[in-house]
Image (cartoon, rainbow, N blue to C red):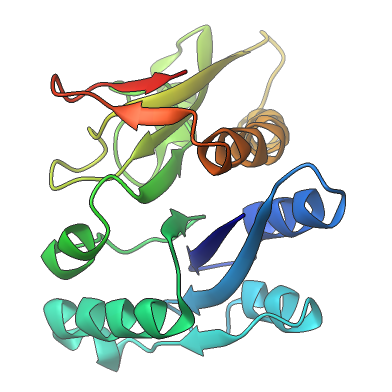
Length: 201
């Protein structure tokens, strides 16, 4: 069983999907800490209702991003986290976190990387007019949104889709794919080779 530290910034729907997968026995993991970059994020309520310890940072804490990441690293280490899960965390992870958890920071992105990097992947794909977008799960590294890709799942954009309906499709895929990939990690089936590519055994 792996121990997860989950970083969030908002409502925490992916956090809830992970909590639910653990409760259902589909994910052999335990969430040891939830860290939020916003003190009023609803994801903190989800964590507390599940009995998970939390740490809430404020905008002032991020005035020095490196100091904020060092604080997060210490909290994750104190909690005994093996892996860090970025579940809608809207802050860039920096050297302190990357060095503390090399190839152990798992991010979810609402587009098929390397297309539509950045914080608005779904909206950018929709605005561009592509016919297929999707979800990417990858290891975070110093190259923003370009770390080793673990898994991707395509989502077709229908002619009558709106941005809101596309977002709903993306979220549905995220909530199924993220726990499934974390279970592969828990089973020791995901590795990063010398070529920098992630592989599923």
